[in-house]
Length: 457
Image 1 (cartoon, rainbow, N blue to C red):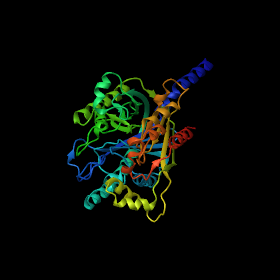
Image 2 (cartoon, rainbow, N blue to C red):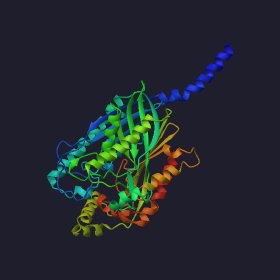
Image 3 (spheres, one colour):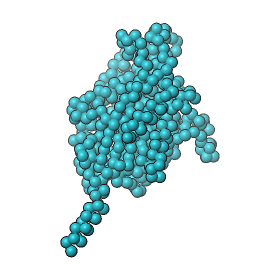
Image 4 (cartoon, one colour):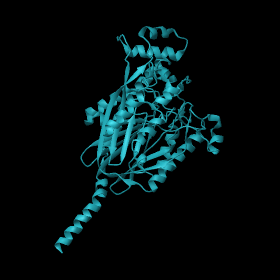
């Protein structure tokens, strides 16, 4: 009898250990409103000519802190902003290291890319930073400083909120995104009905559910690869991602819903331009998230590994300093603004840098979820390629690979080699608005993919 009892005990331990380990997380969450106290300049579109006029929805900085059974911690920060500059990210990360001892790899910052949020720091500098009156520029500087403090405060609140938790993952589908390079906006409704939309896309909706020890939902993190460009007016708004978060929070009262933007640089919500459409797309995405939460999800074992590095991506077709100085007299305002932006940041240096420090981060959450964080406005080709790295593993393995763009530093569009060769706005025409001095070199895709694979090893 004694030997039988021992065998049963051991079998029981083997059966319950994975589930028990999946519960052995700690997690905390927070949200801080980042609506500017004053009406300041908005970001996202070059045609803007005055400050914001009101508010449609709130804008949020939301944080999730997770700690595994071995004490490894990761902090995810999601921002209802069009983007964030490396300088702003550095200030946030330095403060978090000083206050909480967090290393760079433990912090991931993602922007929803809403085009109805405030201009922040040097992000999209030539688009707005050098185009507005000095008094209004001073207000932008003050807002950036306030934003940094709010984000750091929000992370501190999330860390203070940490409690025993469990994590589960799942994946749904939402067909809002349309490849804007391959489909005419005016023809999308007709072509969609005919089932003839063209171009690559990523309609996956990754979902991470964080539950308290009593099984109640605490936080829901979800992503989608599509531009937040339904709206273009002068009211603060989270666009469709904002409405998606509202939808999730209405379905699951008391939950903090966090949205991260995927590789949607060449994906648009079409048709667009109305509040009704923004609400509709947000509701559709929120419904997809709700279906995942209410369906079958997978327990996440309590292990976390975080990686981060900056790869020196090469640039081509760079101007000389003298050529930039000559452009200061250009009648093309954004070329003139780009030249001034670059020269101001160049300081006393005689030559431009021939590379850019491109941020790549990755988290391995449990044994299943691989979460990749890429800087810039990343085209969908990267998500497809990175998910293909899981080939040869279980059939649903691509759903376990989550690829975020707009993370840590939104410095330019990140075209694939194909898009760079084809050209167009995503292939390099947009670089003037970001202040990039030239085009990316053709090897950028191979270098990014190589680093992702190295981090996975």
